[in-house]
Amino acid sequence: MNQELVNEVLEKLKNGELSEHYVKKEDFLSFREVLVKRPDFKHFRGIAGHGGNIVYQYLQEPRS
Image (cartoon, rainbow, N blue to C red; front, top):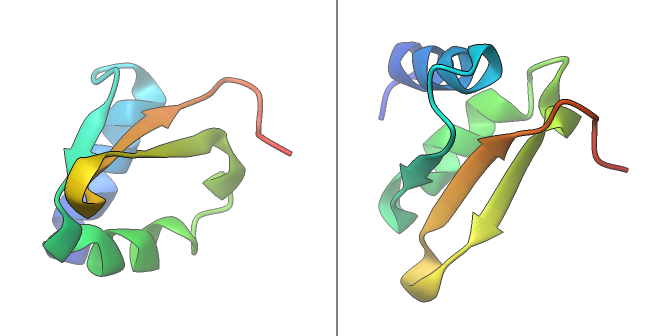
């Protein structure tokens, strides 16, 4: 998963175009690398699933 695609997905989550995005275990590190550099990082919630896969959602209020 390249940085452009990750940023596109994160923007769609932020804008409400997507309610959630599923990230496979093998794409997690590249996805997270881009995510943690964003100023709105705390607005994203990752929910771990079976087998190391994660579902990301955007929250209006930042998590603590």
